View 1 (cartoon, helix red, strand yellow):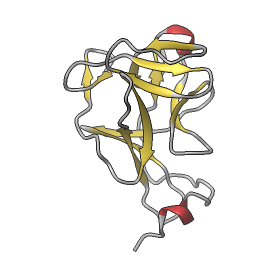
View 2 (spheres, one colour; view 1 turned 90 degrees about the horizontal axis):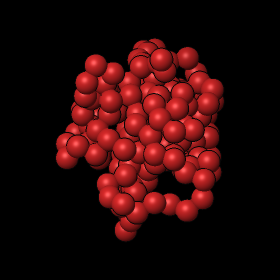
View 3 (cartoon, rainbow, N blue to C red; view 1 turned 135 degrees about the vertical axis):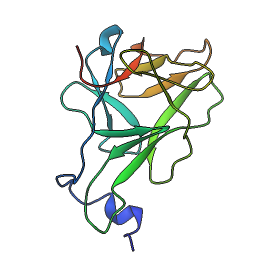
Length: 149
């Protein structure tokens, strides 16, 4: 039996029992930044230092080991929004199970081919599905599985 999410959210991260590759931004000023969960919310963000480790197979799961009594993974989900840029969040329950991993560098996309993400200096990260663009210092980028090279 797992602890409720609010208990697990306040536990320090421990060494995971499994490991996987990182996910890294390829373009714009975000290039070389790694995907991670925000330390203050469930939002997905790009950080310049070390990123999370992931299991990928349709869904994208962040290995998020806090305790043997907590779920060890958080799913990367696309959240609903009125704009064409959709927020991304790491959540206990998966709702996005159809990510694609394309080409020799495993670029991440959706089934309809959306592979452009918007990263903002505020830390916000979005999937771009149209032409709307958030205000502020933001750039478009692609994400790939594996280290930056």
